Length: 81
Image (cartoon, rainbow, N blue to C red; front, side, top):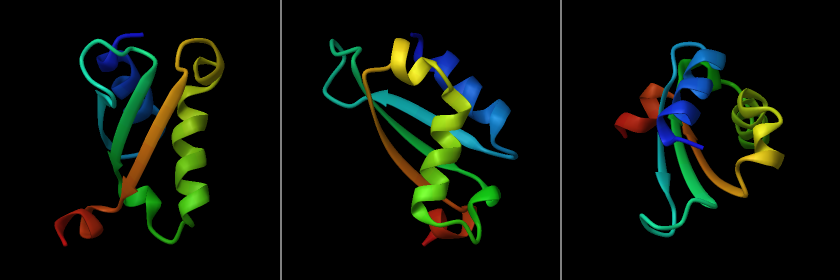
């Protein structure tokens, strides 16, 4: 799956988010991805709930197109620190 498509899915699902998706183990590994997502929607959410929002944005693709996804989530204020 194209990294830009994954970013778009996340950004369309999580309000006011900015997503950056990379290959976690290098340019040749399409199976292990990493996502950094910044959104004010994460305020007052637990880490588990934040990650669930990202996984929900990707839906069935988490079991069909994406083998593994490392997730980091921040509010805009947390990202500035």
